[in-house]
Length: 319
Image (cartoon, rainbow, N blue to C red):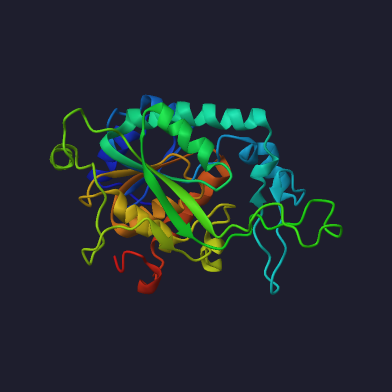
């Protein structure tokens, strides 16, 4: 990346916390466990969190990732090919036991308390989920003390659900065990404002409390039509849950109401959210504990950030 500017040096000094890091144009990526980092990072220093977590369960354990890479499946479902195109593996959330579902709730209640610690009052959290687990995850975050502010619905046809009963496909050809997914719910949460404080006061003091309107002045909306992640982006970052830049840049833009502040992605993966923040011009911090994905992000972030996304692909119209 070359020599760091004085701003980058100050940014790293404040947030690296002695972890291995890479400095990008306006971002800092750390090879660390987000639970450890969020427990020691400066309090009330983050303006917004935008993240797609692995739900703290077995789909991202090293053993399961190795099975995915070797094509052995494990908890990863290999969807069918269409029109000669191979589809990326998807985690089988329905494979979770009652005990593992309880672990999901316990994890997110504890993680939510750490999110409250690092967020400024009025700071928003955008968290990717799915229809099967969202009720567990969202209720856990509310118990942690975060305010539930609604859902952002990403309209996208996934390959989850719609399957015939397992091992009885021929017996019940006209039955599907779950509906085919056509949307992805993102939970929207906010760290509570101090008692008696208005949104306007919170904006003046902390730069948080609301969401940034679109460039044309219209409100940010909670339903966003989205494409599947384009192949050119997958070729840059081979991560199993990679989201498209067109969608990520839209929600990143909305996350900082005044267009200023710091966005955190505690489950960075290959860095697509951090790349979106760089493309929009925001300062950002990404945390990733898997060495493979952290190494991948070093090159993926600048390449994804430089992609020219067509205006019609962006819900916010243009950047």
